Length: 141
Image (cartoon, rainbow, N blue to C red; front, side, top):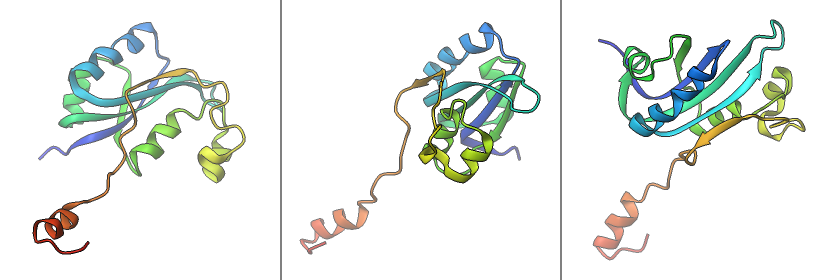
């Protein structure tokens, strides 16, 4: 069975305007959230888009490839939190070394960031099931 997810990170190497243009309709049709940043690789100097999105419903990587329409996209399911994945895309010219040691608290986080963010990064909310149950039975929570 093909693994499906609602959270993916992506890289598009040597992107062009068409690659960027396909992201907005993909966001509108399939996503709750999408962010990308324009970057240049430190060693090979390859221009690329570094991105992350959350889907409205689970899709396989094959489904994402089909629906997104970009031929150059490399996908992986997101590890860590949505905020961490989003911040990674917004690191700008912060070096990989600084990112690995300091993440978004590094002095160069977001330096010359160029990209786009659609909506607000999703974060986990407080679980209120037990509070609701206590309220239903008039127990103090």
